[in-house]
Image (cartoon, rainbow, N blue to C red; front, side, top):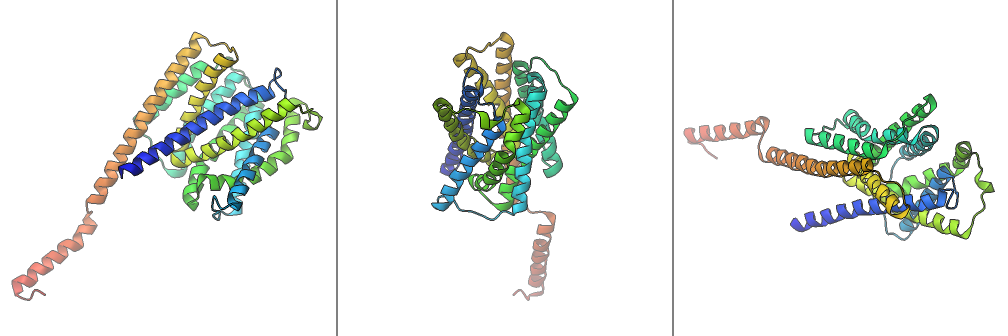
Length: 343
């Protein structure tokens, strides 16, 4: 039993580590690929389509070689999920274009309370006071170190709202679909990735043209751009797989908290590798955020142990309905003994 728990803990840490490393790595690779000082490949939506195309190819090879099994999930659920996920991606890109970076960060911070609210509404999930307090600390910390100028307009606000709602719903749906159809994280990803890739590659170039005013067909590929494009797609496979793994093992709220840890890592690496400015406010915010994440981990563990105790107590104690037949049986035997006709 202890061996199983230890193995599970190692798997959990591995999933977290894979997500953090791949996510931070892909941000650094995309920074070089998409920045003006790099290779100026500014087609974010189409790039995401490439990411899912490579992920779909890996899933296809995995199924063909028998490495992973394919379970049935209704097509309409896969299409609905892909539509929500792609709307999330498009909404985030539009929000970043139409709003200031400060408001974009605020909209990302709002995902934790939105996920909590949606899980409460959809799955009647309850959160302890400690978990709520730790989430507030994390949000405050990340807000202090990332939010600067805050400018917003009606279109940008609408795009941000759609992006936040769809991203939250997508992350909740990953866990619920895995439980509903008893399907593994990689199996689910291999089913949704082809649909997302096809739709993003079809409509992505037009969305990117609206966002940046350039058409991808006019972009001149260099050998360096190809290298970073392949690196970005490779890291995206690990990022997508680990995202599904983390949400399947934990929850959408935990994944959001992990996401803010990645924000802290990106800020730190930006300062170390790209000479980004890191003021006292940023450092203080990162410290607060890390403290909040430590408190969150402790609060989740306390909540889990409390739930396990309740479940164990319920399992080992008979209810009144369960004890009633037992009492009747004992009384019946006692009466038979008194009458001298015990069987």
